[in-house]
Length: 112
Image 1 (cartoon, rainbow, N blue to C red):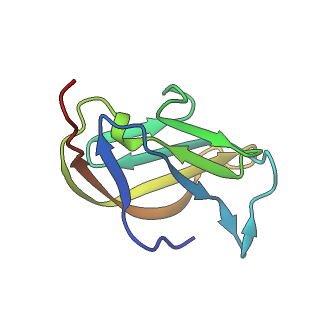
Image 2: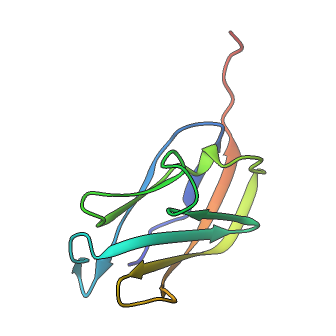
């Protein structure tokens, strides 16, 4: 799976990044992926630990939804080579899936 650019994280904003889980040019088998762990910088999101507001397998576990801007204490900057590891019933230690850069930035809003 190749990404066209960095994953975007707008600090304190609920924007969503969706990663279609592709293997051999097609989506992974429905419900085969049981866990996903995404690490970038010092941050680590795990579908078994974190609430679905941050990281969640959706669409029959064929898509990973990330809301990186909601990661607690996220600091603006570019995080190179974040790693996504996927697990299924056959891979106790997980499969290295993709590397992805993350760009975290502030999104200014008007005070209310």
